[in-house]
Amino acid sequence: MVAGASEVLAATVRAGPWAFDVVRWLELTSTRRAPGWATPHETVFETPIARLRDFSVPHSSAVVPTLVVPPQAGHDSCIVDYSGEQSQMQTIVASGLEHALSLDWIGATVETADTSIDDYLDVLDLAVDHCGGVVNLIGDCQGGWLATIYAALRPERVNTLTLAGAPIDFHAGEPVIREVMSYLAPAGDIRFYEGLVAAGRGVLRGRHMLAGFLLIQPGAEISRQVELLLNLDDPRQVGRYREFEDWFKHTQDIPGDFYLWVVRHLFCANELVKGELEVRDERVDLARIGMPLALLGGATDHITPPDQVFALASYASTPPALVSRYLSTGGHLGLFMGREALREHWPPLLAEVLRHSTGRKRPRRGPGVDRRPA
Image 1 (cartoon, one colour):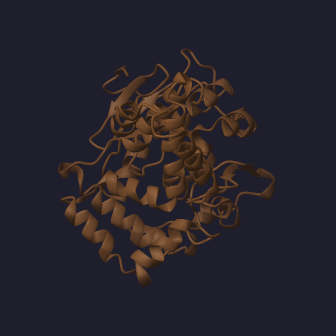
Image 2 (image 1 turned 45 degrees about the horizontal axis):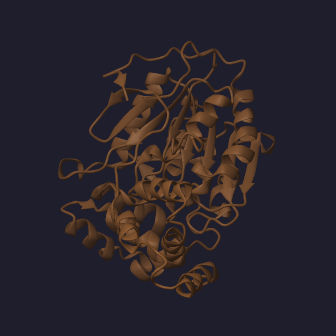
């Protein structure tokens, strides 16, 4: 148990067993509600595996549309619009990039269990088409390596590329996930993960992903639950707790074929930076990435250490003068929804994206499909 969790637990014990409403605490810790998107927007198309959500300001004068590719790790994509006070999408629009959209990954079912990397790249291509053919691409975590693969395959369609907490060199730094993989997939043997997918009838259950995250930092989980117990009479604290837990623990499943592809080719073989990754018989050459880069890492990110994110600059052909690096003091999730990152790091980063977006002819916006209020 980490020191912080130990101190909180000790305070709880000293307070005595009758100081708390245990029944209410149990209800709060065991009941989850579906998370939602905080900002009004429109859903402009939907496929069996993803939606495209449009947050644009009406009659926006933004030159190049900005497309966000959220994480896909067993949680809802709404982390990019987490709350009214902590919204990456609101921060993007407020920066002057007023034509802003986000993909929204749909949880896998038995019917979509065979979804592949090709299918996800097709959805990304469809979203770029809707935006007019050229975008400022922002990729968070797993969405970052997907965005990077797309930018390497279709560089003419990406005006700028921004990555936040995105693993590019999966073996750089000292990530906890790499250590876990050394035990669960020794020498690239992924039978453990194949067994998880088989047990889920072809999908990786989101609850298994959640269990893995909790095992990586068990002290954080203990601390969060005990902090709630100590602050049951504080409505703001209870509200913040429920808001986070509803997002973090309301899981969604991942297509098994896609997940095993990621484990095999990226986590184990690290093929993206080795230049060995192939998609549809086309090699993913990071040197084809020459557009301006903005790279954001977290100093205490144990999921994706900053070196994994910043590694892209060493493989892309982007001139050093067009590469910007930003380092938040926080951890992984804070890069997408933390107050520090959204107030101190994203605004100057997005100002650079906006600067590189001026002077380009505004792309024609594609037609909406199944357009309706979110």
